[in-house]
Image: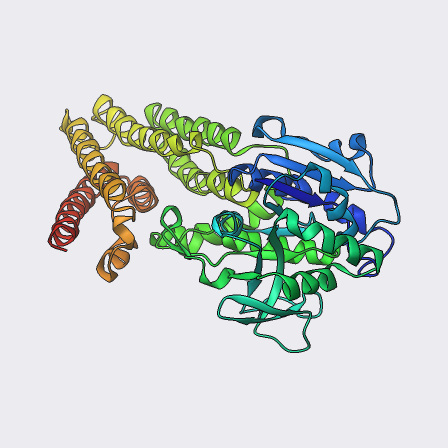
Length: 458
């Protein structure tokens, strides 16, 4: 399947600088570059970019698409060919089968494109809930039995998202529409009059995202100005937030991360580079614990807890989720365990510092060993359950969601460490982590077995 990406707008919808909308920066890349990233993610690698600009001008705004595996054709239209109808018609000779039209000023959730690909025949994407969108800038549709009856109606039961799937048989009709000076909406109405046009309601697309442990409604936004771009960006930031988090991550880190992400996303740093930076800072914590700088190390763990949530959000907001990025969780687990071992090692090496009798001995290391064992087992139960069931254990039932708020994990344990260091009893911090980790491991194991057994019975 081929995608047509018109870097043009409907005549009269904006001022004379409409074409530059697609080149505006959104979260570190141009709007049109983001579109290409989503096309590649959906497996649509044949792309035709149609614009009044030349190839070199467009490529200046496509900084990081070489690694996407796309085959891009550039088609230049005259400066007065600003209507989408003429732009789509210009690519007629490059089309052999069904194709999707993706206006370059449209920011959207990749799931919409993936579902549009699977639909058979001519299909328009619409939304029957436009409470967050202006009906003044999106055409209303009348949809009946999943068929588009009218486009551009005064009253309707949905609004046009902007994405559509067409076939070569519409080109003769588009040629007639272009000759008569029809707008894109008028052209689509003519297509609906002659052919059966199906509707894809984005509200019907399954909203649950296992990796985010919550329902995320498919997002879309038409960008007509820099003001629209800012509003779109705020919604994008909000859409990156995972659900069912621990107390610290939800009530503290979430707000800090989203504020940082809003500005961080415009920098050239990549999610993987941010992961590396987070690990460097995390192992600095381990070094501080090993060398006895316990208060500095304890405070720095809070910075790591914030940084640790940014790489995934940065990948999601840019639409660049990769398989490589999933290995980040393994490195997170490693540096977290290094904290407990480093703290225990220092306490065992300096038994007289926190015990007048010097009776600590190997107790801290033994406790750390227990922490690592329980954490490892709990993590394995959690990941194994997700691999088998396709849903996170912490999002499986009301009890699991509530327990996730206070289960044993890094964001909770850093409070034990800081409190123990301030009170001069860091060994008690390790004890608390051990007990909390043991309870978490037992609960995870029992709950996983319960849900898996119930699944077998069904």
